[in-house]
Image 1 (tube, helix red, strand yellow):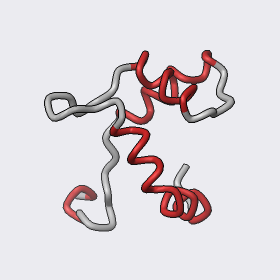
Image 2 (cartoon, rainbow, N blue to C red; image 1 turned 120 degrees about the vertical axis):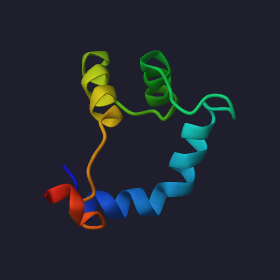
Image 3 (cartoon, rainbow, N blue to C red; image 1 turned 135 degrees about the vertical axis):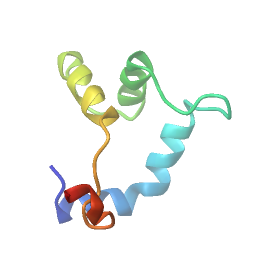
Image 4 (cartoon, helix red, strand yellow; image 1 turned 90 degrees about the vertical axis):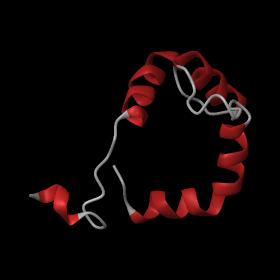
Length: 75
């Protein structure tokens, strides 16, 4: 799903994205729940159907291997 267009959007909006995400966190809590994710999406004013939030949340929790910086993962 990653592409340069998405990267540019994220980079251009990173301070706002971080501020929104951090509004749901505290020093003892590093992740948001599915319910908080739905609130975050509504708070951001994104027009995403409730039916689609769960798969997006699940995808965001999956670890991605960065094969560009860790070539040992390819072996």
